[in-house]
Amino acid sequence: FGSSLLVSSTRESICLLNFCPLTSRLARGPLKSSPKMAATLVVPSDITITEEKMKIGKRKVTLFENVGLLCMLPMLHIHQSKMDKYDMRAVLSKKYDADDTSNAADICRRRQESVRKSVLATPFMWGTAWTMTGFAWWSFRRYNYQSRLVALPFIFYGGTFVGRAVGDIVTGRNAEFARDRFLGALPAKAYYTSD
Image 1 (tube, rainbow, N blue to C red):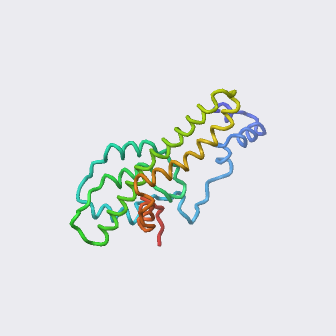
Image 2: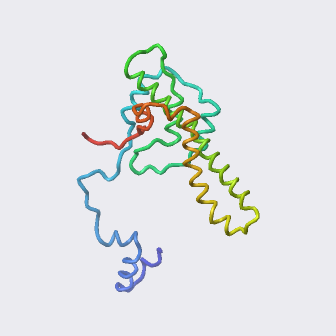
Image 3: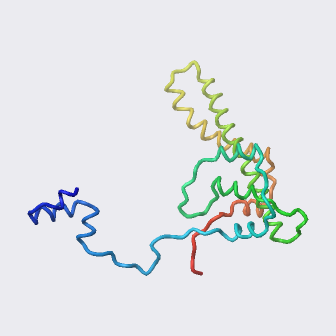
C-alpha cells in the first residue's frame, strides 16, 4: 500500500489512488460538514429514569429468572425499540418500596412484574420447541434422514409458538392487562432528540 503512493508515473498513481478507498477520499478533498449530527446518541428512556428515581436498593435476580435471561438471544439494536436481556436484568435487579402508593412506584412495580413474567416464559418456549422436535425425530426414526430434515425445521418453528403459549399460561402472562404488557415492552434506551 505504501509503495503504491510512491509510483513516479502520475497516471499510475491516479489509478491506484482511485481504487484505494482510503486515498480516494483524500484525492477528492476534505469532507463537507453536514448540519445534522453524524452519530446518534443513545440515552436512557423516560421509564428508565423513573425507575432509577424510584428504586430503594438492589433486588436479587432469582435462579429461574437467570435461566430465562440465558435463554434469550442477543439483539441487534437498530431503532432502540425493544429491551434486550441486559436491559431486562437491569429492570429485574431494582428494588422498590412496597409501601409507596405513588403512581410512579406503581408503574415501576407493574413493569418489573411484566418483565419477570416475560423472562420466566422464555425457557418454556425453547423447551417446548426442542421437545416437539425430539418427538418428531423419534417419530421419523424408521424413515431416511432426508424426510427428517424436511420436517424438523417446521416442527421446531411451530414449537416456538406453542411454547410461547404454554409459557404465557404457566407464568400467568396471558392474564395480565394490556397496560401491564405495554409497560413491560417499553424500551430502556432511546435516541436523543432535541425536542
